[in-house]
Length: 113
Length: 110
Image (cartoon, rainbow over all chains, first blue to last red; front, side, top):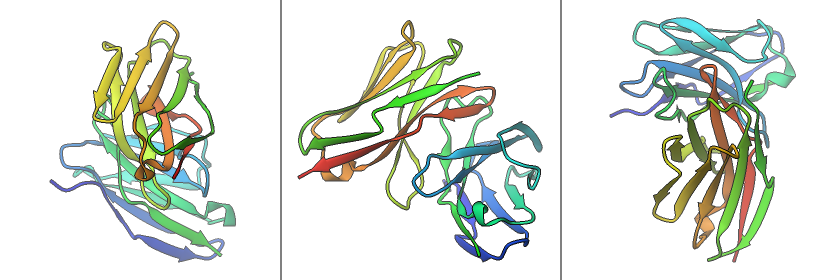
Protein backbone atom coordinates (compact mmCIF):
# COMPACT_ATOMS: atom_id res chain seq x y z
CA UNK A 1 0.00 0.00 0.00
CA UNK A 2 1.81 3.09 -1.25
CA UNK A 3 1.71 6.21 0.86
CA UNK A 4 1.60 9.77 -0.39
CA UNK A 5 4.39 10.58 -2.83
CA UNK A 6 5.65 13.94 -4.04
CA UNK A 7 8.10 15.03 -6.69
CA UNK A 8 10.57 16.53 -6.96
CA UNK A 9 12.19 16.40 -3.52
CA UNK A 10 14.11 19.62 -3.97
CA UNK A 11 13.91 22.42 -6.50
CA UNK A 12 15.87 25.62 -7.05
CA UNK A 13 14.37 28.38 -9.20
CA UNK A 14 14.99 32.05 -9.82
CA UNK A 15 12.57 34.92 -9.34
CA UNK A 16 9.95 35.21 -12.05
CA UNK A 17 10.13 31.56 -13.09
CA UNK A 18 7.31 29.07 -12.89
CA UNK A 19 7.26 25.74 -11.06
CA UNK A 20 5.10 22.61 -11.06
CA UNK A 21 4.99 20.24 -8.11
CA UNK A 22 3.38 16.83 -8.21
CA UNK A 23 1.57 14.62 -5.71
CA UNK A 24 0.12 11.13 -5.76
CA UNK A 25 -2.32 10.41 -2.94
CA UNK A 26 -2.47 7.37 -0.71
CA UNK A 27 -4.30 4.45 -2.23
CA UNK A 28 -8.03 4.77 -1.65
CA UNK A 29 -7.95 8.52 -1.03
CA UNK A 30 -9.73 10.91 -3.37
CA UNK A 31 -8.92 14.34 -1.93
CA UNK A 32 -5.66 16.26 -2.13
CA UNK A 33 -4.78 19.34 -0.10
CA UNK A 34 -1.71 21.49 -0.60
CA UNK A 35 0.13 23.38 2.12
CA UNK A 36 3.03 25.80 2.26
CA UNK A 37 5.30 25.59 5.29
CA UNK A 38 7.91 28.24 5.87
CA UNK A 39 10.79 27.50 8.21
CA UNK A 40 9.65 27.52 11.84
CA UNK A 41 5.99 27.97 10.94
CA UNK A 42 2.98 25.70 10.79
CA UNK A 43 1.51 24.50 7.49
CA UNK A 44 -0.53 27.14 5.66
CA UNK A 45 -3.44 25.83 3.60
CA UNK A 46 -3.23 26.69 -0.11
CA UNK A 47 -6.15 24.77 -1.61
CA UNK A 48 -7.89 21.43 -1.81
CA UNK A 49 -8.93 19.35 -4.80
CA UNK A 50 -11.79 16.89 -4.91
CA UNK A 51 -13.45 15.40 -7.98
CA UNK A 52 -10.96 17.29 -10.17
CA UNK A 53 -12.14 20.66 -8.89
CA UNK A 54 -10.81 23.17 -6.39
CA UNK A 55 -13.15 22.75 -3.45
CA UNK A 56 -11.61 25.17 -0.97
CA UNK A 57 -8.90 27.80 -1.12
CA UNK A 58 -6.78 29.51 1.48
CA UNK A 59 -5.42 33.03 1.43
CA UNK A 60 -3.01 32.64 -1.48
CA UNK A 61 -2.81 34.74 -4.66
CA UNK A 62 -3.87 33.55 -8.10
CA UNK A 63 -0.21 32.83 -8.91
CA UNK A 64 -0.88 29.59 -7.09
CA UNK A 65 -3.01 27.23 -9.13
CA UNK A 66 -3.58 23.53 -9.26
CA UNK A 67 -5.10 20.59 -10.96
CA UNK A 68 -6.39 17.15 -10.09
CA UNK A 69 -6.37 14.29 -12.55
CA UNK A 70 -8.88 11.43 -12.91
CA UNK A 71 -6.51 9.12 -10.98
CA UNK A 72 -6.68 11.62 -8.05
CA UNK A 73 -3.07 12.77 -8.43
CA UNK A 74 -2.55 16.51 -8.31
CA UNK A 75 -0.27 19.30 -9.40
CA UNK A 76 0.53 22.63 -7.79
CA UNK A 77 1.70 25.40 -10.12
CA UNK A 78 3.26 28.63 -8.98
CA UNK A 79 3.85 31.42 -11.50
CA UNK A 80 6.06 34.52 -11.27
CA UNK A 81 8.02 33.13 -8.33
CA UNK A 82 8.99 35.48 -5.52
CA UNK A 83 11.73 35.06 -2.95
CA UNK A 84 8.99 34.65 -0.34
CA UNK A 85 7.72 31.53 -2.09
CA UNK A 86 10.73 29.63 -0.76
CA UNK A 87 9.27 26.98 1.53
CA UNK A 88 8.43 23.33 2.00
CA UNK A 89 5.35 22.44 -0.04
CA UNK A 90 3.37 19.61 1.45
CA UNK A 91 0.68 17.55 -0.16
CA UNK A 92 -1.85 15.76 2.03
CA UNK A 93 -4.30 13.11 0.92
CA UNK A 94 -7.54 12.15 2.59
CA UNK A 95 -11.08 11.07 2.01
CA UNK A 96 -13.53 13.83 1.13
CA UNK A 97 -15.02 13.82 4.60
CA UNK A 98 -11.63 14.52 6.27
CA UNK A 99 -12.64 12.54 9.34
CA UNK A 100 -10.15 9.76 8.85
CA UNK A 101 -7.20 12.07 8.82
CA UNK A 102 -4.95 13.74 6.31
CA UNK A 103 -1.72 11.95 5.42
CA UNK A 104 1.25 13.95 4.23
CA UNK A 105 3.82 13.34 1.57
CA UNK A 106 7.50 14.03 2.21
CA UNK A 107 7.25 17.50 0.72
CA UNK A 108 9.07 19.46 -1.95
CA UNK A 109 11.65 21.95 -0.74
CA UNK A 110 11.48 24.97 -3.09
CA UNK A 111 14.24 27.56 -3.01
CA UNK A 112 13.78 30.77 -4.99
CA UNK A 113 16.96 32.75 -5.64
CA UNK B 1 -15.29 30.39 10.86
CA UNK B 2 -13.24 27.97 12.90
CA UNK B 3 -10.42 29.28 15.08
CA UNK B 4 -7.97 26.90 16.77
CA UNK B 5 -5.76 28.12 19.57
CA UNK B 6 -2.92 25.99 20.92
CA UNK B 7 -0.92 26.32 24.15
CA UNK B 8 1.83 26.41 25.14
CA UNK B 9 4.03 27.40 22.23
CA UNK B 10 7.04 25.74 23.87
CA UNK B 11 7.03 23.00 26.51
CA UNK B 12 10.14 21.67 28.19
CA UNK B 13 9.83 18.55 30.36
CA UNK B 14 12.22 16.18 32.07
CA UNK B 15 12.60 12.80 30.41
CA UNK B 16 10.14 10.41 31.97
CA UNK B 17 7.68 13.12 32.99
CA UNK B 18 4.33 13.78 31.32
CA UNK B 19 3.52 16.50 28.79
CA UNK B 20 0.14 18.07 28.11
CA UNK B 21 -0.72 20.30 25.15
CA UNK B 22 -4.10 22.03 24.95
CA UNK B 23 -6.18 23.33 22.09
CA UNK B 24 -9.45 25.22 21.94
CA UNK B 25 -11.75 25.53 18.97
CA UNK B 26 -14.65 27.81 18.16
CA UNK B 27 -16.98 25.92 15.78
CA UNK B 28 -19.34 23.72 17.78
CA UNK B 29 -20.06 21.70 14.62
CA UNK B 30 -16.48 20.38 14.48
CA UNK B 31 -16.53 16.63 15.00
CA UNK B 32 -13.00 15.38 14.34
CA UNK B 33 -9.75 16.42 16.01
CA UNK B 34 -6.38 15.12 14.84
CA UNK B 35 -2.94 15.64 16.36
CA UNK B 36 0.20 15.76 14.26
CA UNK B 37 3.87 15.38 15.19
CA UNK B 38 6.51 17.01 13.03
CA UNK B 39 10.18 16.28 13.58
CA UNK B 40 12.76 18.67 12.21
CA UNK B 41 12.95 18.48 8.42
CA UNK B 42 10.23 15.84 8.17
CA UNK B 43 6.58 15.74 7.20
CA UNK B 44 3.76 16.09 9.77
CA UNK B 45 2.61 12.67 10.92
CA UNK B 46 -0.82 11.87 12.27
CA UNK B 47 -0.26 10.39 15.72
CA UNK B 48 -3.75 10.23 17.18
CA UNK B 49 -7.22 11.57 16.51
CA UNK B 50 -10.57 11.67 18.25
CA UNK B 51 -14.14 12.00 17.10
CA UNK B 52 -16.80 13.96 18.89
CA UNK B 53 -18.73 10.89 20.05
CA UNK B 54 -15.97 9.88 22.51
CA UNK B 55 -14.31 11.74 25.34
CA UNK B 56 -10.94 10.03 25.43
CA UNK B 57 -8.73 7.86 23.25
CA UNK B 58 -5.44 6.19 24.14
CA UNK B 59 -2.62 4.67 22.12
CA UNK B 60 0.22 3.41 24.29
CA UNK B 61 1.87 6.50 25.84
CA UNK B 62 -0.32 8.97 23.97
CA UNK B 63 -3.86 9.98 24.81
CA UNK B 64 -6.26 12.64 23.64
CA UNK B 65 -9.19 14.01 25.64
CA UNK B 66 -12.10 16.02 24.30
CA UNK B 67 -14.50 18.31 26.15
CA UNK B 68 -17.19 19.32 23.67
CA UNK B 69 -18.99 21.56 26.13
CA UNK B 70 -15.90 23.63 26.76
CA UNK B 71 -14.68 23.19 23.16
CA UNK B 72 -11.22 22.05 24.03
CA UNK B 73 -9.11 18.98 23.45
CA UNK B 74 -5.74 17.98 24.83
CA UNK B 75 -2.82 15.74 23.96
CA UNK B 76 -1.23 13.82 26.83
CA UNK B 77 2.15 12.11 26.50
CA UNK B 78 3.26 10.00 29.46
CA UNK B 79 6.77 8.73 30.27
CA UNK B 80 8.31 11.09 27.75
CA UNK B 81 11.36 9.92 25.82
CA UNK B 82 13.98 11.78 23.74
CA UNK B 83 12.26 10.72 20.51
CA UNK B 84 9.15 12.64 21.60
CA UNK B 85 11.01 15.89 20.91
CA UNK B 86 9.21 17.54 18.00
CA UNK B 87 6.62 20.17 17.13
CA UNK B 88 3.04 19.05 17.77
CA UNK B 89 0.03 20.51 15.95
CA UNK B 90 -3.65 20.17 16.71
CA UNK B 91 -6.31 20.75 14.08
CA UNK B 92 -10.06 20.90 13.57
CA UNK B 93 -12.09 20.64 10.35
CA UNK B 94 -14.02 23.54 8.89
CA UNK B 95 -15.49 23.88 5.45
CA UNK B 96 -13.54 20.99 3.88
CA UNK B 97 -10.19 22.05 5.30
CA UNK B 98 -8.28 21.48 8.51
CA UNK B 99 -7.67 24.57 10.61
CA UNK B 100 -4.33 24.17 12.38
CA UNK B 101 -3.09 25.36 15.73
CA UNK B 102 0.16 27.32 15.82
CA UNK B 103 2.15 24.36 17.12
CA UNK B 104 3.92 23.40 20.34
CA UNK B 105 7.63 22.74 20.42
CA UNK B 106 8.18 19.92 22.90
CA UNK B 107 11.67 19.67 24.38
CA UNK B 108 12.65 16.59 26.38
CA UNK B 109 15.44 17.31 28.83
CA UNK B 110 17.78 14.40 29.67
